[in-house]
Amino acid sequence: MGDPERANLRRAVRIAIVLPVAYWVVEIGLDRRSGALEAAFAVFALLLFADFSGPMPHRFAAYLLTALAGLVMLVIGSLAAYWGWTSVLVGALGAFALTYAGVLRGYVAAAGLALLMPLVIALTATPAISEIPNELVGWSTGSALAIAAAMLLWPRYARSNLRLRVAGALEAAAALIRALWPESMETDGDNPSAAAKAFEAAAAEVDAAYDGYLLRPGTATSRDRSLMLVVDGIDRLKTFLAWVAEATERGASSIDRSLLATCEQMLAACVRAMRSGADPPVPSALNAAREQHTTSTEAYASEGLGRGQSDAVARTLHDSFRVRIIALQTQLIATDVRGAVGAPPDPKAVATYGGAALREHRRGLGDALRAQLHIDSPWLRNSLRTGIAVGLGVFIADLVDLEHGFWVVLGVVSVLRLDARATQKVIARAFAGTMIGFALGIGLVALIEDSDAATWALLPILAFLAAWAPGARSVVASQASFTLFVIVLYELFDPTHFLTASHRLLTVSVGLTVALVMSALLWPRGVTAAVGTTVTAALRAASEYLVAAYNRITSGPVDDRLVD
Image (cartoon, rainbow, N blue to C red; front, side, top):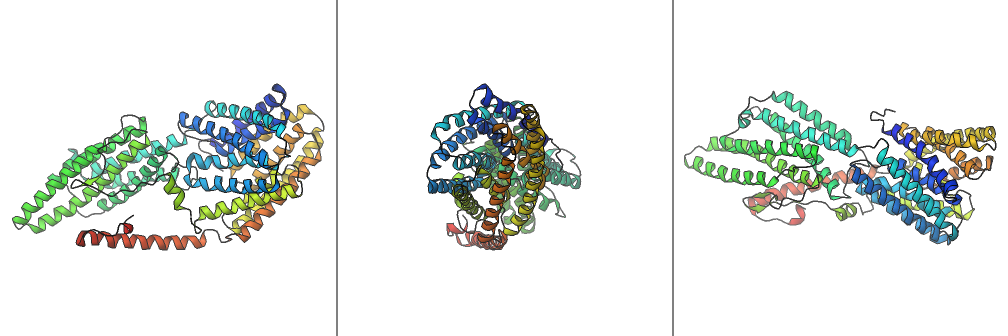
């Protein structure tokens, strides 16, 4: 339940402050009562489900685009709600698209659930075109206040923190190069073992801020793609430098020294750029140094072999290869750092060998989407299952005319996991949490009776708990607090005493049942089977690549498909 950066606390406090204000402004200030709920849910969607982080201009753009997309979702859902099967189809396709788009990670993944909420609210509401303007006003007002709060109240800079950790890792890499080859930097150097441990620790800090996070930078924008490649490049550089550090003998020939010095300077330039966002590195300078190194190495080898010094030449070439592979990786990192800070590409930065450009494949937006578009992909399977489950939830809510039917769909989305077993575990906890919230809600409604003052006083407190509980990693606490919150919110919107609590229990139970059925019918084993298949395919591709590389050296051109 740790929250070292207080991100969860800050998020909950923002919502506790802004949500009651947004609700009051729309219902009382603007006299648009039917749009008050949309205002409240807009605050929840943007500040809890999205909660974008990073530099302020990027966050503002992400929030604004998500808010505008939410308006579109409301209109589409409201119009589709007039026809039963159309609403089911729109719900299924919308949930599939928003879930699958998460493969792009970053801001796109963060916006997915935030955009699904207005869609399902509109799809499951009683159709009324006359209410659409009020709903749009409510969503717009809530979004505007949420964006202002996100920008001004304790903003988060998680991506900036990742960039600082990347800078620290690159700085440690430069220090390790100085320690491994001190004669190249005209310094006594540090202890190689200590420098290697420092670089490993710095790289681990980067991994801790990046690995396993769905909302980490992905492939949605060019800056995110570049930052992702820098993180990958640090891992490869760590492997290469560890390989050198384990060697029993290290040293730099006169040929290698200038190239190593350029590598260290390039990494230092990358550090400055990642920390300041300005003065980007110039990777073409390192490419020129690499080409000069190639020319000098070839001349040395030719001269040494002519003198019969084959053993000395072999040792020098062996050491030079390590230097060259580190230089090439450093150049690739520098190229990606330019992209990560938004600098224009260096026109001469293409990695070359002997003047010929090396093959380089950079995945774009379309590549990332197409890569998962096969039936064995966990992303596609999860998206299909979510889409079908949401469509079924919309159908059931419409079929039995459930009031507040969107809770059915939210119940589905909140517990659906990659496999049946995990879904079953979450469902049991979610139902327990809903029952606890149901019981507490009934007690609160009975206690406050018709007191608007008491209801308004409880609203920010319960909004805080509903926003804070998910960060506590407790499904029971999350469901209980959210159930309690919506009961009090609807008591304020439409005082019905115990009816809201009863509807909440019924609709969530239906949603949990739908999720259980979908997880049992569609790929119940989740990603277990896919992992083995994927690992086997990766090993086969790596083997084919190795064979193709060897054949390229010994026999000339090979089939491009083997090295793509």
